[in-house]
Every structure is written in structure tokens, then in C-alpha cells.
Length: 508
Image (cartoon, rainbow, N blue to C red; front, side, top):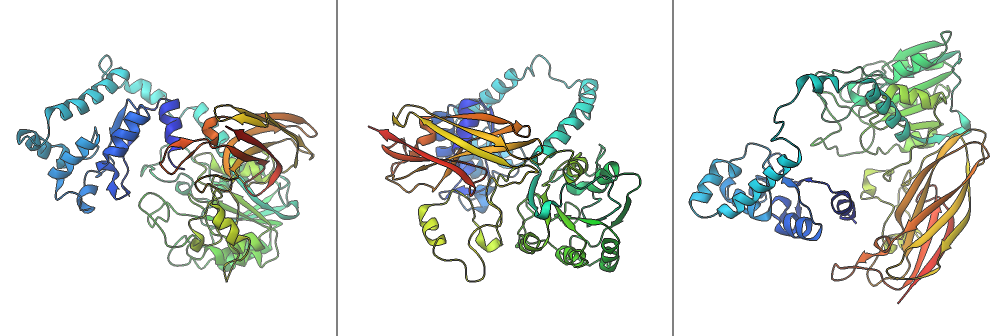
């Protein structure tokens, strides 16, 4: 399940840099695993690049108690296949010198790592041009084409989760609008993890984006309403008053990248619910009766059960970047028809974790028979889900041939028609299910998808090719195999919204 993306990146796309990770897999810290760093990575996948350590990664062997100290850890990681330690750890510095002098590490292993480093430098041309051209580097960043790409990326990735009564898109000449919430005018929170303390580029907040699109005659009110964490701002009354006096309210909530971060590497949180008083703020606004739109700005799925049930429109903006405010506004006012689809399953509650669409048949069996005592077992939003301002119809599924040998390809085609009044993009998703197999396989797996632009009334034929790699799984001996038998083919708009189904058979 987890190795195929690495196979695609390394064997098919030729990636030349891999970083070992912190966890232990099957009881062996990754930095110490010769099986992963050499046998699988280099021998099976044919990797010819550099393996880098994580920051402090050599030390994972010490706190996992696989090595007694840095010196011993350095010896183990070098043997495993780690070429570069990226942080100042003595295991690959002074201790490594001593390990070589004592005969605990061979010069052959040192030469192997150095050879890989030098080879990479040759590939990059660093021996011919070892220094940065500062002027060229400065001229190559923060350019207009970068802003356009940032805007396009944010527009494509925003997901419309709910649009009850077609509240969205809004009219730009709306008489009044209240923009509320701790993320409405926060620049840093749009950018996510690993952002410099000083932000050098211009950031467009959601408030900025809305202000730029509405009519000059529109009365716009902004209230922060609450903090992300800690003490409330005591602005609930102001937020309620702003909502009461507006034709529509946009509440922007989510996660925090500031001093008390709720998102980012090493900043875990026990609950996936909105932090602080944010949900109370949404409730206060909704209770005014003013049509309410919630915009979520967050780096991980949030369990927003009350919002999903009680707020008519919900937009998942993720961490939309420097042009995020413009992208959100484009979606809210219909300059862009939303086409983002969920790349993850969003749970109702953290207690559902792990939650994913490609679960085993045993889970499907029990989910069809009972729920949790206090809530449904189904997720809040399914993998691949996302709404549009138009509608799409699927038809004409064709699978050819319907009987193949295990080394053959299968061609799948279908038609998609825009049945609404607006142009838009549909993400056509192709799933398969190996009906009977010698080991347990998921109830469905996404194998292909295409995003297609359709004018109102336009129909296009979508074609996919399924290869033997798509049909294979790891057998009891962890060997890839394609077994004879029936395969279901499912095409749809999400993992739970399957529109067309068919099948083919693999024969001996």
C-alpha cells in the first residue's frame, strides 16, 4: 500500500534523493535498516542517488535503544546505506573517524558514501560551477509567473464541501457582507509549516480577496471574533452584531501557525475538532439566522460535525498559500467553479482514526451492520469528494477486453457530460476491486483519475489503461502477483459516489 508511490518516483521517474525517516519499521529504525535503504531501495528499485538522514536521525538509534551511543549508531547507519548525515551528529563526524581508525568501519564503506556524494555533485554540475550566482538567484524568485502559479494551484485545490440551497456562488453586488474569524485576515496561517519568521512576499488574506471582488457599494464588516487558542477575545457580541447586520456572513476558521501552533511537524494535537472558541464563534454567527459560509484554513482534516450539519456552505481551503485569499474569493463569488477533490478521508471524530477509503472487506462487513454507539461509522466526507457549481452525468462504460492474461492491459472508457448551466471541471475517478484473492485486499483502490473541463451540455470520452501493475498485489510471500479471477471496475465522482460499474476476468 505504501511502497507503490516510491516505486513510481524512483524506478519510473528517476528520483535521486531520498531521506530516511524517524520511525522504526518492523522494529528496525529506518536509519538502521539495510533491508530498506539498500535491499529494497537500491537493489530492488534501482536507486542511484543519495540517501540523507533526517535532522538528528542517527540519534534515533540511541533513543530506540538499538545503539548504545552515537559512535555505535554511526557505524550501523553507514552499513545500512545512509550516505549523508544532515545535522551535526558525532556518529558521522569525530566518532566516525575513530570508528575507522579502530577498524570498526571499513574504508570501503566510507568510499561508497563519498562516491555517491561526488557522483551527485557531478550530476548537478557543481564541480564546473560550485558557487551560486546571487544576482541570478535573486531575479528568479518572487516573479509574476510564480504568483500566477500560486493562484492557479490554490484554485485547483480548494474543495467545496457543502452548498445547501445553492448559497454559493455569491453575487459581487451583494449589499453587505460580514467577514469573521481568526483566519480571515491572518497571513501566516495561509502558508503552513516551514515559513520564515519574516515573510518576504505579499500575502493575500481571505479578507483582502473578498474586498477586491465585491462591489464598491458593498458594505463589508470585519471582526476577528476569537483566538485560535487560549483566552477568548470577548468579541462574540461584535461578531453576532456584524452578522445580524449583513446579508451573508463568511466565517474563516481552522488552524494556527503562530506562537501556539496547532499544525506542522512536531505539533500534534489530541483532537481534530476546532481549537479554542472557534466553534462557539461559528454557532453565534449561525444563530443570527444570517446565511453563513464557513471557510476552513488547515493543514490536516478537521472533524467539523456541527458545521457539516448546521452551516449551509462549507469551503475547504487547506493551506492555500500567498494567493490563497484571491483563490478563496474566486470560489465564493463564482469567478472559478470549484474542482478540488479530497485526497484524504475526513473523519467525524478523532476516534475513527485510522480512517481511509481502501479498507478491508471485514470492515465493510461490520460497517454495513452497525454504527458506533454514539455516531455513524461512515466518515464525514469521503475520499475523492468535492462539489461543483454544475452537475455531471456518467454513461457508456466500456471495458476491453473482458478476458485477459495476467500480463495484458485493459482499456476502460466512459463518457462524462456537463448537465448544468455552468462550465466546470470534473475529476473522473477509476477504482478497482480484486473480488477473490489469496490474501485480503481492499474493497476498492483508486488506480486512475482525470480532471476534465466541460462546457454546459458538452460530453467527452474519458479513457484509461489498467496495467498488470495495477492489478497486482503482494502475496503471502510478499511477491507481486496478478491472480486469475474477476475484477470489478468502478468509475465515479468519489470513493462513495460510484456512477458506473463493470468487470473483467484474468485467466490463466
